[in-house]
Length: 456
Ligand SMILES: C[S@@+](CC[C@H](N)C(=O)[O-])C[C@H]1O[C@@H](n2cnc3c(N)ncnc32)[C@H](O)[C@@H]1O
Ligand code: SF4
Image 1 (cartoon, rainbow, N blue to C red):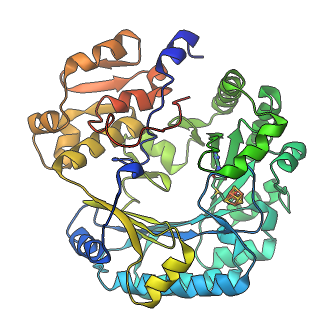
Image 2 (tube, rainbow, N blue to C red; image 1 turned 60 degrees about the vertical axis):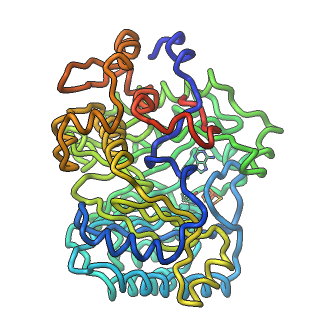
C-alpha cells in the first residue's frame, strides 16, 4: 500500500508514455511520400526484425465505457471493402520494406478483430504470409471479444498460426456487464483457455476497474475467478473516463461510477491477490505467470514496449501498421493513418499510403525515448547500457536528455528511487508512480496538448 500523502502529491495529469513523444505531438501535413521515405530508411535501422500491426475498427455493439478507435457496424459489404483495402495497403507498403528481415511479431487489434469471419481473417493472413517471411518463434496475437468465440472459430485461428489471444473480459459479474452494454463470454472462459493451452497458445485476460456497480470486493472476486483459470497474463486497466472525447461514456454517469478512493482500493486488492497467487507484476497494470516471456524479460532487464503493449527486445521490430488509425513505429518516425474509414479506403484505391499525421524523430527524441522506455519497462536506468544501445557516449546521452542529478533529489527523498552516477533504481513505491519518474526526462512535458489522465 502506498501512503495517501504521496499519492496526493504525485497524482498529476501526465502522459502514459506508450510512445515518446506521445501521440499528441504527431503533426498534420506528414505526407504519404514522407512515410515511404521513413519506411525505406527503417530498413537500415535496429531492431532489424519486422513487427506488423493490423487495426480492425469494427464492433457489433458499443460498450459504454469504450475508449478504443472503433465503429459499430455489422455491414458485411463494408467489412469486405475494408479487407480489400488493408490487403492492398500491405502490398503497397511491403514493396518498400526489406523483406529479408524476419517478422517476429504480428498483432491484430481493434475494435474487435473477431467481428470478422474466420474466412475474412484468413484472407488477410494469407496476404501477410505471401509478402513476408515469418520467424518460427514469431508471436502472432489477436484481441478478441469472448462473446463471439466458438470452439470452431478458435481452431481456425490456431490453424492460421495465431499463438496468443487476448480476451476482453472486463468483469465476470453479469450485472456490471449489463450496465456497460456488454455480453458475457459465449463459452466458459476456462474452456477457451484450456483449448488454447492444449494447442500451445498463450492467453491474456483484460479487466477494467472503475465501472458502475463494481466494488473492491466484487472486483477481487472477478480477479480470483480469473486466477483459478490461470491465464498466462492478466491486465487490470483503470477505467479512463474521458467523456469530452468519447461522448457515449456519459451514459455510465447515470448509474454512478466509483470514485478515486474506491478505484485505488480495487487496484490495491487486485494487485495483492495477483501477487499472492504468484503472478509477476509487469509495470503498473500487467501481470504474468513466472514462466511467461514478459516475466523472464523483466528479470533479465530486457522488457520493452510499443503501442501494442509490453513485449521483449527479441520479439519487437520496426512496427509497420495497417488499417484506419494504425500507427507505424519506426526507428526515426511515427506515422498514423487517417481515422476516417471512407478516406482510408479511397486513398488506398488511388494507390496512396493513407497517412494523416506523423513525427520525425531527431537525436534528442531518440535518446529520450530510450531512457523513458528503460525506466517504464525495467524500473532502472544504467546510463552506460542505454547509451551503448543507441551508439552514443554516456556524456552525450546525459546532455541530450538534459539530465540534472538535482532533479532526482526530491524523488529520492520521497523513497521513489535510489541513484548514483552510473545508475538509477526505481523502488517498489516508485514503480507505482513510474510516470512521474519518466516525466523528469521529458523535455516536451510543458509543450503541446496537456489533457492527460491522472497517474493513478
Ligand atoms: C480493443 S479492446 C479488446 C478486444 C475487444 N474489443 C473487447 O472489448 O473484448 C482493448 C481493451 O481496452 C480496454 N478498454 C477499452 N476502453 C477502456 C477505457 N475507457 N478505459 C480503460 N480500458 C479500456 C478493455 O479492457 C479492452 O479489453
Ligand atoms: S470495448 Fe471492445 S467490444 Fe467494446 S466497443 Fe470497445 S472495442 Fe468494441
